[in-house]
Image 1 (cartoon, rainbow, N blue to C red):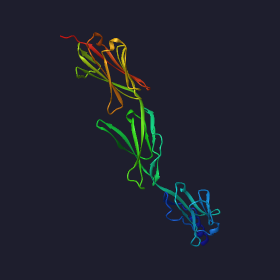
Image 2 (tube, rainbow, N blue to C red):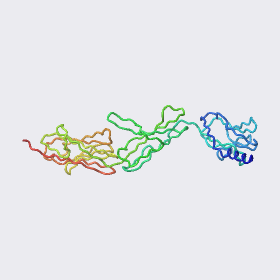
Image 3 (cartoon, rainbow, N blue to C red):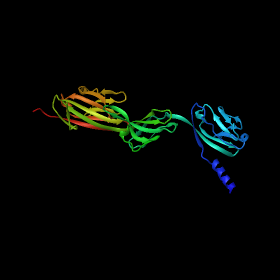
Image 4 (cartoon, rainbow, N blue to C red):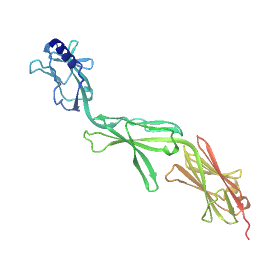
Length: 326
């Protein structure tokens, strides 16, 4: 009965889980890795599968054996580095007496990785935050929200190294930020931005004004000679679109997104039109406005705003009808 008990006790020591030991980079190991052995001269320490000591000999810099007490074969280490992390075994032949895992204490950091991702509407995207450090960092995700008064990152309630977005919509088009922090010498988290670009074909809207007054029925305008008209084509698209205004089948001018320049037609009867652009607030887009006066018969016509990018194209039409003065 006693022999059976001793065997069970022996196996419980050998099969015990490794003891975790943490250390500060650049510092000495606070306490030795303790180990009680049968024979000092036949004992060794291993880092993983690599033997680093045997008896009183050390095969690695910054390592000492402490055997000041009988049967003890303790491992001391100085000026700890990242390379010292790993599994440590106190052994004699095939016999293992103690197991340790050494882990360096580090403030949270985020490894440099992909910072720009392009997708399409309906895709599934995984954004990764490769945060490292010990203790294990807490990772929180934020999304940039643009408003009229400015913009800021807001917590979206997701934690963990991966942010998964299914069935992506154009509203997912923004900058995401992961923040990582742990309890080791940190007061503020570190952060990394990931820009998610969701490509979609242009959404086109036309805002109409006549003599400074907004017109509710945007598809059709009743006008008289000398009226001043402003047709603003509002386009939301990713990638940015080229936007063209035309009258019937005659091109008036085109806004080129690459250089931000408006190229006007050389047709003589389009010179009376003024084209101007401005970026849209809150959403991703451009406004291309056509300003002119109804001072010729041909100005009473159908006006088309056509927007096109790599994903597709879209068009809106406004028809101006001539109303005779009473």
